[in-house]
Image (cartoon, rainbow, N blue to C red; front, side, top):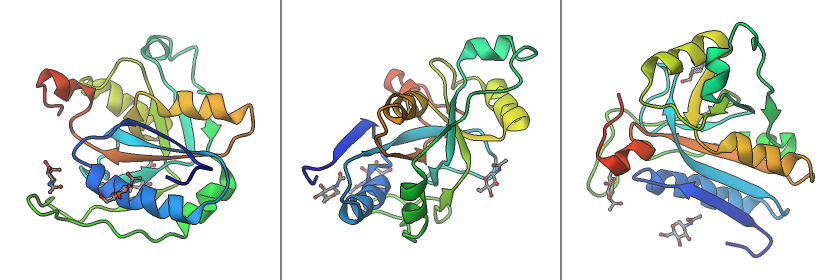
Amino acid sequence: MAPSHMGLSLTTTSLAFQLNVTVQTLIDVFTVTGIVHYGTAGSSNDSMSFGDVSVPKLVAYTGAWTWKWVSLWKKFFWLPVDSAWFKIAEQLKVKLERCNNTFCLPTTPKVVYGLKGSSADMFLDNAEYRKFLFREFGVSTVDEESAAVVMTTTSPGIPVIVFRGVSDWLEGNQHGRQQA
Ligand SMILES: *[C@@H]1O[C@H](CO)[C@@H](O)[C@H](O)[C@H]1NC(C)=O
Ligand SMILES: *[C@@H]1O[C@H](CO)[C@@H](O)[C@H](O)[C@H]1NC(C)=O
Ligand SMILES: *[C@@H]1O[C@H](CO)[C@@H](O)[C@H](O)[C@H]1NC(C)=O
């Protein structure tokens, strides 16, 4: 990575071969100091499938406790990614590969820009919770870190952009659990 970049790679799994292309392109394009945050996410949007990459415009922390209190919490605190970086990312026209040397996805994955992502500290084997997030708040991907990353970089004014590759296996796969 170029020395002027601080990359945050928190979870990269089998999607690394795709995310790598995207992130590498970004690193080649951007010369400003900032954070390119990437990793995997669970999909809460039926139109987002395994292998798709989401570049959200807004992320929110949707911790499990907010679910319980939804009647009181109809509004999440949406955190925007850096708008200039988002615009550049949108113009990249990255094409994702359907296959690597050994494995092919059922359909060619896509990069989707401008959706809403969310982070929760506990969650993902909970299909109802994902449905709820999509239905009530239009959240397309759920992960464990991006809201925290955006939150901590927004106040010091460091540009940040988020890429999340949809994976059916999140942190749960470490315990041999496959997520629906
Ligand atoms: C191809 O992708 C599969 C599934 O994502 C992964 O398990 C495998 O290691 C990859 N192979 C190479 C050569 O990158
Ligand atoms: C992407 O993969 C290439 C070749 O494997 C490697 O040189 C490069 O450092 C990777 N980039 C990132 C951001 O991981
Ligand atoms: C769900 O994902 C699709 C892209 O796969 C997108 O076009 C659509 O806007 C998303 N839905 C919402 C509510 O964001």
